[in-house]
Length: 335
Image (spheres, rainbow, N blue to C red):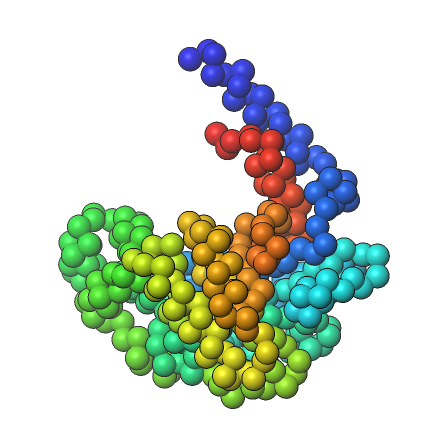
């Protein structure tokens, strides 16, 4: 047991040391032509369909991020990224939003226009015009329903899930995937959650008219699959290719763009890079591709992005991304 203690202490000391390195020095040691941020939504009120999935920033917090970026970085458009056009001597930064949430038009767009900031919005095409609800958003609504249900109904829901507490129910239902959406729909029925009514009443996703206005504003629209699956868990490469190609084709038809950027739901983990390269070779209207993983270096055709929804200042998130990348390079595990 004692032999493991010095190693754990050393890892802890190494992680502490990495947190003390100035961001400016990190930029020299881990140079990047640009860093990216990915958000999903920005809102000043609770969003029941998002509440139990992830945090999101208020308009004031998002605007503070924008002001921080402007003070230290040059904002880059998709064309700047595609053609590697630098803007001055400051490092470049690009902003993206995934999923196609309604707040992108109602809340985010006015802030971006105010500060003249370019942005790429990646749309999950099945959700467009509120025709269909994301299975994870159904999950959040079910968790909210269980948490607020009377004891008798809550007990029945817990029994259906085979768990004994609301927290265990939350873990169980959040682990369900798109392939298990029929189970999620059954839970919705038991909970009294009606996705169709919610779609019509709350309108959680962007509409075609809103997207056309965003294009007119100068923003870029990209694709984010048809129905937001975990691509690596699909049963065949042809299904993965269909999610990418068909969603990009749908966005291309809407936007009339020559090239349609694509962002992977969750991440591109587990997807062979030569397979992706072949997709790009066969369909020259697709690209570039965008992933998660902070500032990690990827292939030339995949851009990584820092998660911006975390309710911490942007500068802190950038520093943490450099720390995470350094820790990975040095092979320092988390205890």
